[in-house]
Image (cartoon, rainbow, N blue to C red; front, side, top):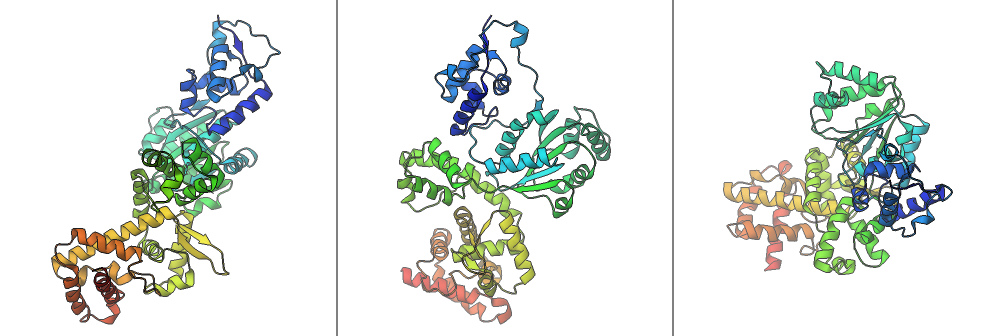
Length: 495
């Protein structure tokens, strides 16, 4: 029989510090138990201060970087042989379901503390964690679940990427349901006990289907907590419920982002790492993806990458941006495009001045939505707030704007009509008040893109389009004539 040993209280604190330096969670980091050749159940027993096999104890210590395992062991208890039945892991009270394994977890101490306060102290019935893709919502919920295992009789993790009926059946241990109403009532009966149910990945396309059941569960009397993870916040009516809370998740702190970059092999001075983290909006997923490029092309040297003065959007991040963009209303897209044209924060008053037929209330509502969803930034350098775009969003919005206008130009060329022009009527190609035409990023990118796709010289087409524009009522022209003239001038200056 093997011998068993357990960690002392002081030893667990030492191990916890070593864990945090690596950005690992206590049990959800797959690399930990894989490298230690043990199981998640054994790792949970280690953190509870229970006795585990000495070989597993030493392997856990070495994996986390503690070479002298005796420093954290409870030596007042001599290692003794135990019956085999005591060496079997105890069944846990956590059903992880489809919960993913995560490699590392950095920062988020304030968020974890806030969530624990809501759940433990204020006995929250509903918590919604929302935020853009890649911000680490799932990783935060995993870390939270690990810390709260002793607070609940059971913890259940399920993904919401399925029909509502299938999810309810799953939560009811496979018991079939005839209607959604019946399923909700049966689920509420199980929630009379102290349970934490974590529902991950509430998709925008399914949110309407789930709203009524979520609202009923949140309003009902029970002793459990429902934690919903989504990109978009739940609607405002949820905010008025008793013991319902919302945590909009922003990017990592500068220090946590720097720690993440360094741990993934990104070399450089601290200010360089922080600059890289700022460019990528402190988004953990984006940072991990761009580090791979920096390692491959620049041998991990951050300074060499920053000298290129470019922003690379890895495909997963581009897809997340596209998915978020497709959910926006027309006015919200218009504001993003205008901020991409300005390329710097501008005031609300100045922004409204250049919108065609602006609706003040609609603009404020759209700005509020964009700020809440971390698509635009606020700056308070003056009495009036300034609005701008984060670098990643700026890059995506500019690429999308250029592609859309290029498509309008191609359609106008093929159909021989200016009726195809929409964005060229509602948006100015250069920042109002500037004459730096060739220095303007939108115009330059547009000319370069069209030259690769167009079949006819753009200069000749522009003359025809200008003549057609003069025949239109002034109320429908918008910025079209100005933009066509700017395009013509840009071509002449370039050649």
